[in-house]
Structures are given as structure tokens and as C-alpha cells.
Image 1 (cartoon, rainbow, N blue to C red):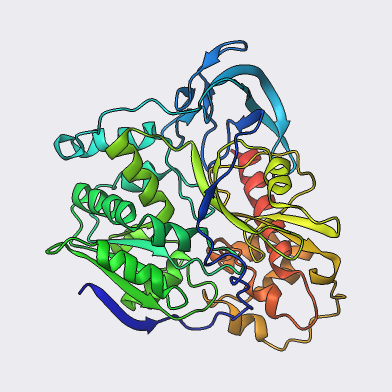
Image 2: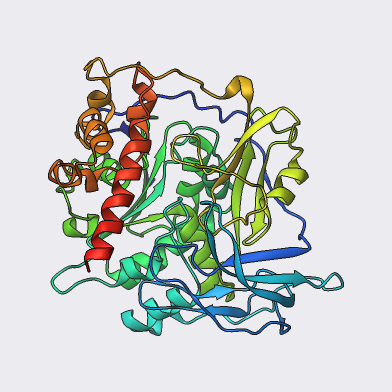
Length: 444
């Protein structure tokens, strides 16, 4: 038995209503193919991809259409068999216009991906393994979309003692990771085993919140005897899935300010990333589709869907029955997600959910002056002072914000959630961090 039911957690945090009952028991369905797909060359942290196809060129499902633009970049593949209709600026979910590859699906294609032999990962050197992960187009699928292979490039003097797989899914409404763990438990464990072996990890831990007992049992049953993989339970709390919170809860260790999990010889990945990694090394399938949750008060037919990357959000919402009373659609979870100004944007590799909210379900709290109650301090798992940062952000005092460790803010939104005065704390901090980055870019 590799299952450890302990219910560990971290200090601080909040307990928003879960709202997972809509979809937590719904099996994953396949989203029908759309007519057109839009692939932003920049849908991950790091350098954008470079187009590897031309307008008018016919492409096969799974074919490389974008090459990495640097080491902190990844490969982009066609999610569909069809024709490259255009290469140019298209609307990104963040509202900006970015270079994209637009592909028109072939209506007569079966859209089956060509089978490829398994990759002999055991015989690969670590550097070659990392190149294969980059070639597969893998990114963090919990929302951050950081190129996965970069995490495996260990700096001199560092090693991966512990591999930590994040199956918390603490955001309300979202259940895609839950269903992946239940329905693809063997593939998740397989991906974990591959990474742990190649990185030379002493142990691998899959952390799952206690509200997913079926996922814990499925994963535990899939773990081969004699391996160094275990499943550990965690209390239901937000933001339990944040890397630093997860490490503190499971190992009792704190990642120092300004540092990364690797500074504690820990590598963290998402369960969805492990599924995609296993798909690539065992079946030669790159990251061209992902599971996401479609839910919320504005959805008539909530679902967990396997959706090709690049599918228009409008098509997904139409498929699930977008209610006429919907006033806001959020990409991701309600705490950290991105409200969409338009539905004519694509699903990205990091898209974990699409949530539709009616006017009644949207908070319209009026903002009042901060009363110095300290609730945001009690909510912050990183022990920052969110209210002070919000005041500094409004005053444009960037240097003071940096001295207050604003870089350690993960923008989880727990501070805003708990603020009785309705101050949009996390939005002020997020805007300030963007301004700080822009200022440093101009200075360099």
C-alpha cells in the first residue's frame, strides 16, 4: 500500500466553496473537431515558437508546425489534419494580438493521429531525454504553462532528490485533473515513473486533496509494487496546489523567498503533464490536446472534455450549451483565471477550464477603504502583506514593492477573496508586477 491518508496542509489559506459537484463524476468526453484552429506561437512562458510551415501547406495531425525559439520555448504541433490557412496576428485569451498559425481542418479526414513507435527513453542520456520532452511540446498543464523540459535541466550542483506530482486541483469548479487521475491513473503513474527514473529521484510523491478519494485509490492501485512512488493526501484548502504550499504541506520545508523548489532538490509537475509525457514516450503522441472542465451557472451541459489545442472557445461553449444569461466567461479557475473579452480566442495548452457565470453569480462588491483588519495577511500562504502591496501598487512605488518580496506573490487571489472592503488586491499586484517587468525590460 503506497497510499498515505494524512490530510496534511500549510498555514493560512482560504476555503472557498468548491462547486465541483457539477462535473466531478462526469467521465471525460471528446470534443468534436472544429472547422478552424488557431495556434498562438506564444502560449507558454518563455520565447515564442518559430513557424515551421507556410501558408497553403497541408499538415497532418501531430505534425510539427512551430520550432522552439530558444531553450525556454517548446515545439508546436498541428492538432488537426488540414491546411495552413494563415500565419499572422490573432487575438490571444489575454486580449493582445499575437502571431498565430491558423489551420483549416480537412472535413474528409478521420483525424486519426499516425501511430509512432515508443521512444526508448531508458537508453537516452538526460540531455537527450530533455530534448525529447521539448520536442513533445510539453508544458505545465496546471495553468502556468512553463516549458516542462526546462525543469529537468538541473543546474550544476543540483539533483532531483524528490519528484512531486501535483494532483490537488484546489481551484473551485475545476475537475479535469480529478478525472485524469481516475480515468488515466496508469498513464499518470507511468509518466511519474519515467521522470523519476531519468532524473534519478530518490522518491516520487503524488499529492491529492481529500475530496478526491476515488483518484487516490485509482492512483494507488496503478503503482507497481517495489517502486518509490506514493500517493499522499492533503486537506482541502486553497491554494494547496501552489508549489511552495504543496512542498510545505507534504515535506514541512519552506522554499526560501526568491528561490525555486529545485533549491530544495525538488521538481514539481502536474498530473496532466505526466499523462501527456507518458503518451509521448509510449505512443509517440505530442501535446496536441488536453482535458479541461466546462462548468459554471451559465452552462447547460457541464462536462470534462478532451479538447484539441487551438479549438475556438466559442465552439467549446456552444457544444456545452452556453446560457443566454451568461455575463462572464473565465479561462481557468475563478480564483486565478483570465476573464475573456471575446469568445473568439483559442484553447491553449495551459487551459484547465472554461467557466460561465451569470450576473447573479458574479460578485459586484463595492470597494471601500482598507480597514487594516489583517484578513489578507491571514489568507496569504506566503506570509506577505498584500494590503501594503496594494497601496504601494496604487502609488507606483515599484522599488518598495520589490523590497517587500512582491516576486514571491503567486497571484492566487486569496487576499482579494477574503477582503471585507472589496479591494481588488491581487489585480493591483498583478498590474504592478507587469509594470516592474516592463521597466526592467526597457532598462536592459
